Amino acid sequence: MSDADAVTTIEIRSNQNRYDAVVGSHLLDRVGQLIAGRVQGSCSAVISDTNVAPHFANRVMESLEAGDFQPTLITVPAGEKSKSLERAGEICERMLAAALDRQSFVVGLGGGMIGDLSGFVAAIFQRGIPHVQIPTTLLAMVDSSIGGKTGVNTKTGKNLLGAFHHPALVIDDVDLLKTLSGRDFNQGFAEIIKHAIIADAKMFAELQSTTGRPRRGEHVDLSKIEPLVCRNIEIKSSIVAKDERDRTGDRALVNFGHTVGHAIERAGDYEQLRHGEAISLGIVAACNISAKKAGLPKDQQKAIVDLLQSFELPTRLPSDFPRAEILEAIPFDKKFQGGKIRFVVTSAIGSATLSTDLTLEDIRKAIDQL
Ligand SMILES: NC(=O)c1ccc[n+]([C@@H]2O[C@H](COP(=O)([O-])OP(=O)(O)OC[C@H]3O[C@@H](n4cnc5c(N)ncnc54)[C@H](O)[C@@H]3O)[C@@H](O)[C@H]2O)c1
Ligand SMILES: [Zn+2]
Image 1 (cartoon, helix red, strand yellow):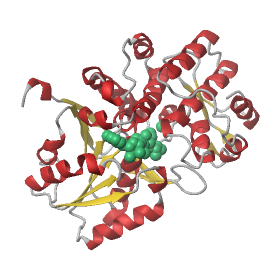
Image 2 (tube, rainbow, N blue to C red):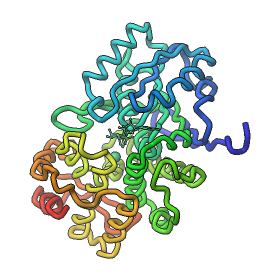
Image 3 (cartoon, rainbow, N blue to C red):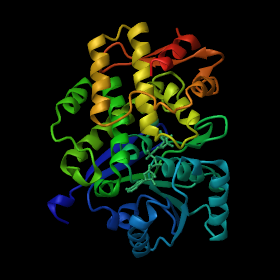
């Protein structure tokens, strides 16, 4: 192992247990070795999608085989539509057919879609088996692989069925980001900018002043990405640690931009925009509301919009977008509890609070401005 292969291990504590996120490069061929000792059992299912598997599945399979973990590869079509109960059921059937049992474990090899789907399968298969996450998108590394929320979408809305199921291990190999399209690389910055807005003004300033910003997967300076991934894992995990089950409102802060963002995803039938792109628009809407309801200064609001744009993220809805359907998608969002609208606002970059002082009309106006 050379210096370039040095790894950073971030310990993540949850109520019941703890797990590590291991961040570095050239980790894919060491998956079997990294898993050994952290996960019991000798059979595994590697769940991936049709874009990711051709790039990386062989190396993961070989590494697991070398570690005597007897892997079965299960590949689903790429895209958010695979995050469904039907697909989760099919995967479970295939795992049963391959004689996986309660001593087995699941490896999720993919972006946030695969992380959520494979985590959900791990949560329900034989009432719960360990889940190892190998995120392959920036978005999944900095956000979705951390915190134990797994689930699938329904016709009614995003992530409405799911389970809390923390991973046993997260392996973040930043080399994997090289094959991401520019679009998919950039959309990860929506969650990074979200983290900066809600918790880290310094990171916000650093993102603003980054010159030679990595905009395309092939131009990524991985030496800059690694510390950024680590910092974002720390932010997400520390927020989650305060309120793992999303009960007190602390964890809800990571949903900044997501009430409108999720509705936009659904209105676009999960096809028109990527998650990060919809969240970029949701952040703009949340800033409009924050300016009115929480006193977010206009110059900060503009700085946020400028930063999103500098990562080529959308800040206005595409002209052909079915706008009318966005508001319709909102009442079904799980953030509306007992008729009250819980909405995350920011009064200054680096902090966020949960407001309950909001009407659907406020949200409608913010959507109209997009
Ligand atoms: N559980 C959570 O806490 C949480 C948090 C944030 C987001 N999410 C979920 O994450 C999902 C979005 O994640 P995402 O943006 O990673 O989407 P994704 O998994 O759909 O990946 C985006 C695209 O990139 C492709 N891809 C992935 N890795 C690649 C690679 N290395 N090289 C080439 N192509 C690659 C995928 O096949 C897909 O086409 C949504 O379902 C969202 O709801 C969950
Ligand atoms: Zn998100």
